[in-house]
Length: 288
Ligand SMILES: [Zn+2]
Image 1: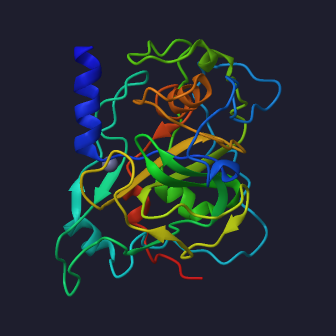
Image 2: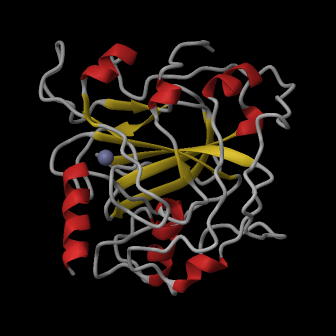
Image 3: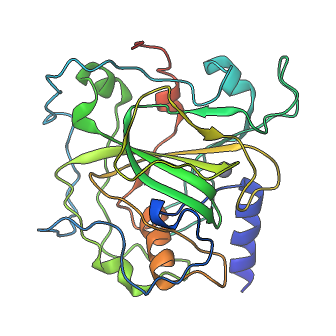
């Protein structure tokens, strides 16, 4: 109980955020039966072998326009550093403490008097992997998936990302349903996942819709476990083609399915955190 309260306190301070699927966007009441909603590719087996992707990547031959866009209107890289209110602090696999992303917030910045309602832009072109409303702790959230094989090789190599071995037993320090162990996706193809949390309003993107870099995702809000308006931005590397229909924890109404998805996303080791500034440092490297 004490640990739970501590974690809850940390989350409240960090002001992180949750998500939910397109189908449940306008339905705050969750009545799902316990079943895993994350898509499970076949031929799945956990591995302890580090995934080497950078050397085997096949850069797309399609000359798609490419960019890395600031996630916040009016803020370049220096501006983002100035309004960083809570830095990246990843916990070990199986634990939910620390801070899984970065927070941007301000009361005044330049000629802006409040971050509330500020447009949030898509950092990297990709596909909607989650679009959820009223989740705990993330509030209204959007997750965008960018397959590594759609990222130009010169940019990808500059990110120097790596996937650590996924633990067979992450030793969960939170109440995680046993269903998390049924999730064994293939790691042959990997993607970057961006989570944008605490949005003012739920978004309306259908799952798998392609979202261009620089497109508006929503507006900065304070939904979910958030004490002040801010953007919580989370970046992970994980198995491709995974979508989430819901995600919830730290609330008595959370279903087994929602808690399972939360644990998979944050603690299983399948979706591995990296510092969002690794990508933010590349803002405007290439413009579309
Ligand atoms: Zn946060």
